[in-house]
Length: 153
Image (cartoon, rainbow, N blue to C red):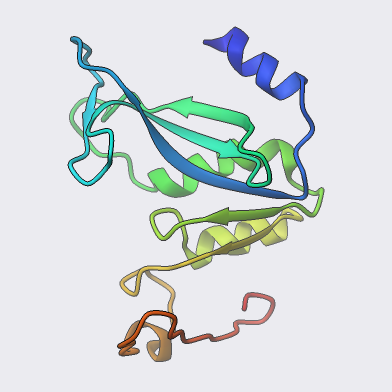
């Protein structure tokens, strides 16, 4: 796996925009870290976190999720994954896009402090959101609320 990871990093320079997301690699055999995610098209398999180029889908970096350590959930898993996958492009003014699973104001602030921009949808129950955002009642698709905190918009 390490050889594949080194090749994906060495053979391609990412565009200015990158996305961080999860993917399921279908697998039905026996494996200690096999995942079951009922809402995914591929329900059983190996979960892989990846940074990909949204212009062409090329995977620049990835991590295989091996599950909880000692049956204890990792605190700050989403932040760690995004930081691990984007660290080598910090300071190069890249734009990272992610979904609401990964998005948090603390993460985006840290990325910004390290010369990396970020954009994503956010869950209303995330810490650090102003009341105007967390209590907003959005009724139709496409409705949005926006607030700005210094350099975070």
